[in-house]
Length: 318
Ligand code: TXA
Ligand code: MG
Image 1 (cartoon, rainbow, N blue to C red):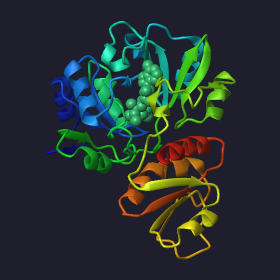
Image 2 (cartoon, rainbow, N blue to C red):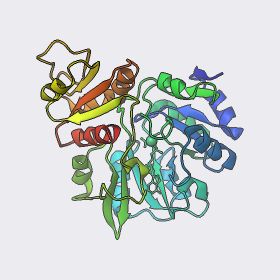
Image 3 (cartoon, rainbow, N blue to C red):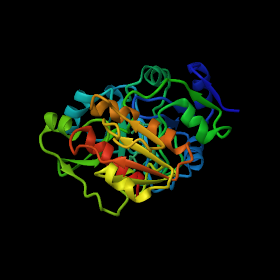
């Protein structure tokens, strides 16, 4: 039985017992375990069916605790942490030797962030260890933005989901690493490139077609619904090829001129990219449940969070 509850003391008991729980964050729900419990960490990989070459993000309660996790904290990383933590930014930094290899997939770096969710911050403050937590979805599937999404994926395979409502950002953290003191974007996410560059100046983008899985969130196929999905510039024109199909449509702000559409989802009538990002996964989950033959998504504007949304839609439609 999987219990959905806001009982933090129960969660603490489970985690202290080398077991795992789903936790809310402001980005997506995570599947969490004590970073020092090999049993818990193995269970995370097993439940998610995640390959061991894909490292986990470590969640800490505040910037002051970072020394437990990393061996270096360069000036640029400090600036970013001060600007965005608690929040949706993961920093890849040289790891402390006490961080188990299973967390980092044998790398000498570790991904770390302070999540910005009151329930999970309160939990972290009551624990004596940080939490490793990948997104709480099976490998390659759409990330969960509500406790019900997690339950749908892992019913009876995890004992508890800590209830924290709908994730307000709705898209994973932005991941930044460093090479020769230069910041490098590993994964587009909840914080836009523009916001990052306001703090530390121009950053480099890690090559999208890089096949070495430094950040498998950057692998080609990811975040995918079961229904065949297409990402196109002109939805109205594209669907003319699919006259007799059951089609679901995902658009940014506009309605359709044709009225023969099975199912239309508009992410932000006001054209607000933040609102659109926050609804993206929930809407994909919804469309995926409708037994449609295809989902056609409209390409978003190529700036701010539009870039992050396009990144996820591209991977979902591969
Ligand atoms: O918003 C988020 O970041 C959520 C919430 C739960 O915090 N977590 C999340 O975790 O998205 P996950 O495991 O689904 O994605 C983490 C990404 C993976 O693509 C992984 O490869 C990358 O972070 N990553 C973690 N540690 C890394 C490291 N040392 N070097 C390079 N990439 C790393
Ligand atoms: Mg993930």
